[in-house]
Amino acid sequence: MTQKQFFKHKRTSLITSEIDNLKKTAFDVRKKVFSMILTAHASHLASAYSIVEVLVYLYQKVLHLNPSKPASPNRDRFILSKGWGVSALYVLLSKKGFFSKKLLNEYCKDGSKMIGIATRNGIRGIEATTGSMGHGLPIGVGLAKAMKLQGKKNRTVVLISDGECDTGSTWESILLAAHHKLDNLLVIVDYNKWQSFGRTNEVLNLEPLINKWKAFNWHAEMVRDGHDFYQIDKAFKKCFVVRDKPQVIIAHTIKGKGLSAIEDRNEWHYQTPRENEIKVAKLEGLI
Image (cartoon, rainbow, N blue to C red; front, side, top):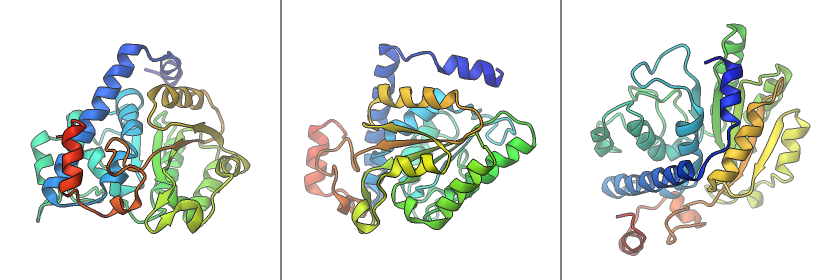
C-alpha cells in the first residue's frame, strides 16, 4: 500500500461495529492490566488506564506492523515516552501476536524482562527504552528524520505525558521537527492533568498548550475526550492529510479512567490496588 492509498483509506469514517470492537478491546486491556498489576503488587495503574483508548486505536487502526517481523525496516515506529504506562502496551502487543500472552504473567517478577518501564531489552515490539522524562520525543524526531533521508514512507508516532511538556528536551525536539518539516511524525499528548507530585498546571502551567504547539509550527488537534473513539478517530484523520508539518494530538484524558475508585486521583500513580479497589473492580467487571 502506498502512502497516498494509506491516507485515503484512513479517511474513511469508523462504523458503529468498529467502535464497539474498539470499546471491547479497551475494556479487555483494562481487565488484564488490573490483573497484572494486582498480581505483581506493582503501581502505575492509573497511568496505564489514561492511555488505553489511544493505544487501542493506534494498534487497531493506524500502525503498520508485522508481529512476525518486528524489526522490518518498513514498519511504523511507536514510542511510548511515558514508559511507566507500559503495562497497557504489553497487553496490546500480546494481542497483536508479538509474544505469547503467557509472558504477561511474568510482569514485574524478579528476573523478568517484562519490567514496569518500557524497555527494548528483549521485549518484541518495544522500540525504545523510556520512562525518563523527555526522552521519547528526541528519539522519535531522530527516527522520523532518518526515514525522510532514506526516502521511506513509514510513520513515527510518539505518546508523551503532559508532565513531559515541562522539559527542555521536549521543546527542543518540537522546534527541530518543525524546522525539518517532519510530516511523518505524529505526537499524542496524554493530557490527564497530573504529574508525579501534583496537578500539571500547578507544578508548571502549560496553558494555552495547543497554541504553543501551533506557534512552533505544528499542526495541532485537540481531543476533548481522549477516551471517545469517535473523537480520537476524527483527530487522527485530520492529521493524516497534513503535509510539510509534524502533527500533535492533545488528548484530554482522565488518570485512572475505567475504574471509578481511582479516577482522577494522583496517589494511583504509585499505589497497588487494595481491598476497596478490588471490591470496586469486581463490581465494575474488571475482575
